[in-house]
Image (cartoon, rainbow, N blue to C red; front, side):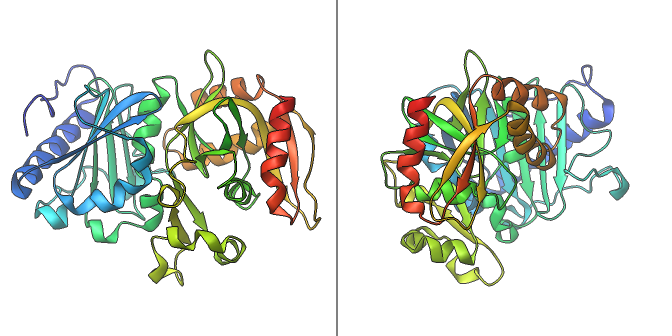
Length: 359
């Protein structure tokens, strides 16, 4: 790999331990790339920025790229962020043991002493995956021990930590929210898991509405609220599969549904309905009811923030005051509504369009 892609790290602008580990990771990727042969580049426009993914081997390609496929662009333009990806199993390149102990881990994956103003580091034990970002050089690394063991949920929302860190410093906050609407504007759907976000978004597929997000999207607050798509994926439990049987052809892990939720890549079925983003006109707080008809009523900005912030902050490594401030700014700029979901989901597109007409 050329030094233009992975430059040497100068130790004067960050902690010695973090920089030394970053250099170790960088050198390990270069060895992996050399061992595997030809690297593979893929380019994406994410949140308005061009992101380059550089794979040392093909092993991670089918596990990382499907969720991002709707944002793919041809090569040629300079990238704002480069992410280098590899696994040890396919490249035969061992990652040196980390210089920290298990006591240095924080619940969201952060590693004490290895993140600062320049460098962000996270290790997710369940996925056996390392994410590290050099913000000064707009260069990141993603490593897993064995691509074949990457959990399905990582394929559904790949590179989440790295994209969160980098986009946060470039005016885009990654949030746990659904998003559907039209090119003129859409709604954010916020709430904890099981609140009805997926039910609402998936009920609108194939209608006049565009899909931006089922679970995660990027949110800009300036000059006005705007949602950007990250992934074209969705997850369904057994009940969701029964509710939306027409989505079965998009399931990517049909052979593992006894132990995993169904992971769907919606671009496969609805390529024309997947959008890169739209202005945010309203925020909806869904809740599931036993009523047949769906109803809505105004909600406060405080209620919207309470529905949006906890699940976002809990899931993202390093999320804190800046993320909270970004979300608080957005909920104050657009109307918010409680959406009491009825069992007749076929009417959902018209309900959303009606709310957009009011906003």
